[in-house]
Amino acid sequence: MDEHYFTPSPKTDDRRFPLRVSLAGRDLDLVSSASVFSGHALDKATAVLLKRLDEITQPSSRARILDLGCGWGPIALTAALTYPEAEVWAVDVSERARELTAENAQRAGLTNVRVIAPDDVPDGLALDAIWSNPPIRIGKPALHELLLEWMARLAPQGTAALVVGKNLGADPLGRWLDDQLPEREVAKVASAKGFRVLEVGPSR
Image 1 (cartoon, helix red, strand yellow):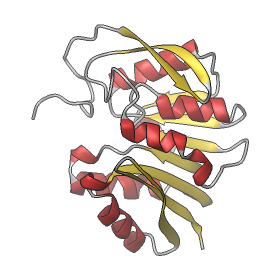
Image 2 (cartoon, rainbow, N blue to C red):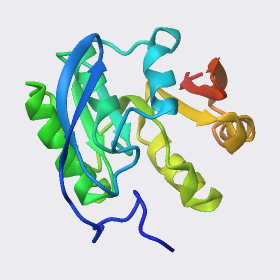
Image 3 (cartoon, rainbow, N blue to C red):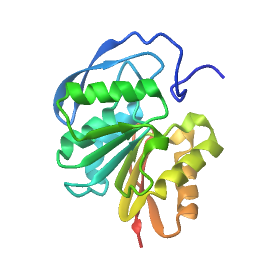
């Protein structure tokens, strides 16, 4: 398999380049690099999720919010900017992605973002919200295992918002999650530009 954004330690050129984006109403001068998902711009799926945050269940001001597959950090940074008192966890298997997210949080003046490898997340961490553009291209079995692992970390009243392309199986994924999580309601809460935002609700 060619090296891709889910490679833990990519060997490709790590030349950094500037990235100017607008997140949570702020124009930010950030940095990105090769072999990071959508390294040159905010990808369409993530943009849909971030524009539709008002349509998902809002966490409390001091929530623990996880960005699963943080890349260079757009979701984590948005969560931290929107909820400055929240504890935001940015998780990615890619060491390069984690380095970029940490640097970008510093560039944005954010002190409430914790960047960490998946295996280093504390066992007892209970999450109030998961926001993610999940890595669909790792394949269905690996994706299913990944999602079930992290959904199990949701607090009883916690929720998850996932953005997935319709052509990449958003609707079947929503049905599968609903079957796998009978104690929670899974629903499509937004749709735009060929993408679905799926929400895993609190325990019933």
